[in-house]
Image (cartoon, rainbow, N blue to C red; front, side):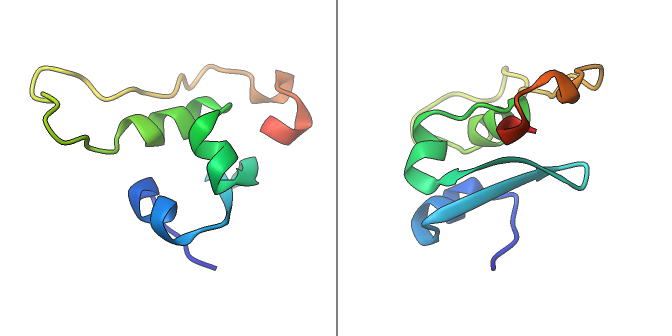
Length: 79
């Protein structure tokens, strides 16, 4: 097991990934699936935080997760 917020590192070392948000598993998939098709807003926010060479970041805000989202309305595998 390896715990991190750095999905850039996860991409290099993991075969399977579990994403947790507020102490709960919100997404679980193979690394390939997770990076190709993230489903949970927190997973998408983490992926958008990975720096990409040559991209301008100074004027762009980081994506946030809406605190008012009712995650219980998501399918069980996405919560």
